[in-house]
Image (tube, rainbow, N blue to C red; front, top):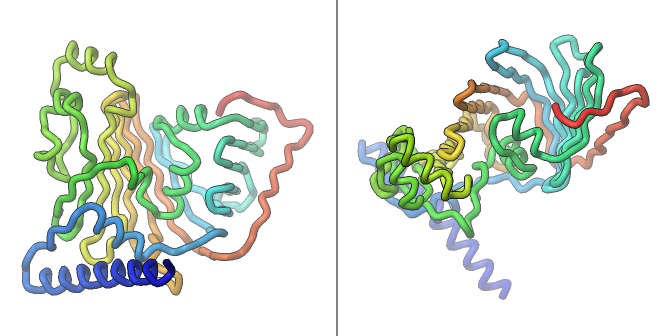
Length: 303
């Protein structure tokens, strides 16, 4: 069994390496990328991933909403699939908030003078605040540079060549086609997915469909390195979208990692833009996640 597994792993590595070399030679000759299937794209991505169990980061970040732009620094500690701890400080370095995320719970401690409180609940309020549905796994993917919400066992994709990148486009039902007017096999990577149906047809389809069935996912990967460059989610049920863009990938001893990330959420009511840059990162150190609530802090049921 071990011999067969070793042979399979070796075959995957050879396949990924040969694809990358082939594409590099093709691009050098002015030819397009070689066509490969979605599984090959995902295998190329996984081959360069950093295997981690503990992770610590310090980031510089900014958030832009209709109310203006706020900049801050954050310290992040993570235990894989278990806990995400975030300490937020403005430019002066005094902690103003602390967050502890676990797979089934969200805890927030606000230390802002005049607005000191703590929140303990689930991901419903967090999703409402972000104007998009989020889970623990989603946030872990976003912070660690993985393509968000890909399930290889459930997701079905078409693979497209988009310049120097591979784009995986989720296959969708005829209901979505009736709303956007484009068949899944004809959708190009950069096509905009607006509602083309009449208001009456849209409401009829929406009333007969679960929200998750009207979601179109697109993921872009570099054609040579398979770096996960961008995710885009078009939620036709709520008419909102989210885009995650990653850049400045660096080679580390453990693998490749994006240094900069930009997240954009667009809804009918407005939007949110968040950017961050990793200033320092460390793997393999076991962390604690301190979260003590002072007695005089108000408890709230929402953000």
